[in-house]
Image (cartoon, rainbow, N blue to C red; front, side, top):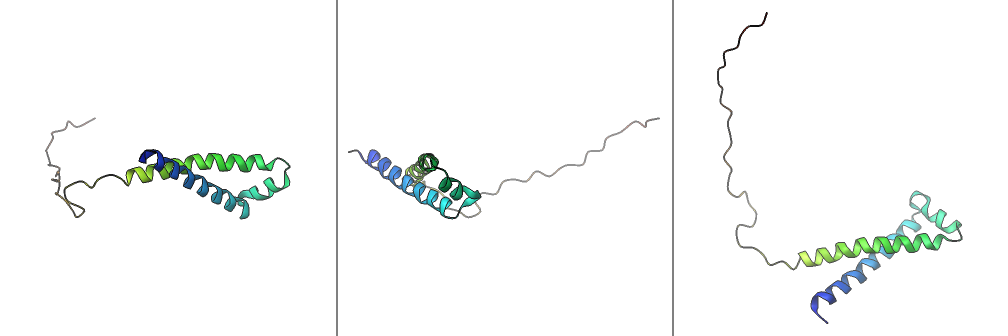
Length: 102
């Protein structure tokens, strides 16, 4: 299996595990009455499944992006500090003759 595919599958698995933990936390802490609403409904499991799936998609994408961007090679050049100073523009005072209004 190619390394990138393996990385993607690992990211998806971790994203869905985080999603399940996040949804469990939402229900356990009863955020906005969600735990009570899901627990008192006979089809509350559909809401839980949708929360896990949709949060899993988001968390998987974030996890994959984080891992891919972490694979970048470091660039040459200064690493921090103040860098090169930019010149500062100083406004110049220019006298302008104005006509008096009546």
